[in-house]
Length: 139
Image 1 (cartoon, rainbow, N blue to C red):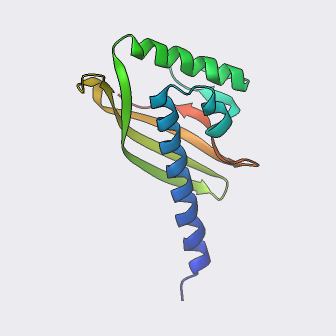
Image 2: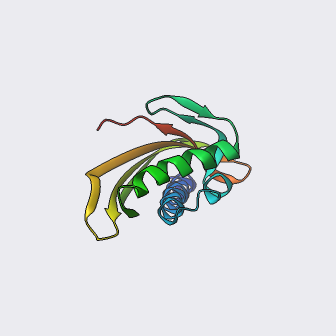
């Protein structure tokens, strides 16, 4: 007989990680940069994009997203839609979350790549699941 406890924790963890990533995108879409380090990220955060950097504090995380959102708002950014979140559990304390999303302008047209992707290292912390790294993805 299969151990349902093993299956249950995996389903619960995958669901929690998926919800965390969706919540992050919602804060991002609303421009609520101060909520990101409070609710979805855990500093220090490693950013593996070009250039690679470390965001040492919650204020650094906030400032990073202020810059990112400010730059895309100049191009008419309105919101992002989550198309899918695939979760790969590494163990009971860590996971990789692959986000497939699309950004839109205020007029409803697609902004940038219609097949955008992001990947995150997510760890279970004292505050629950939190994103601790933005991982490089192939474009």
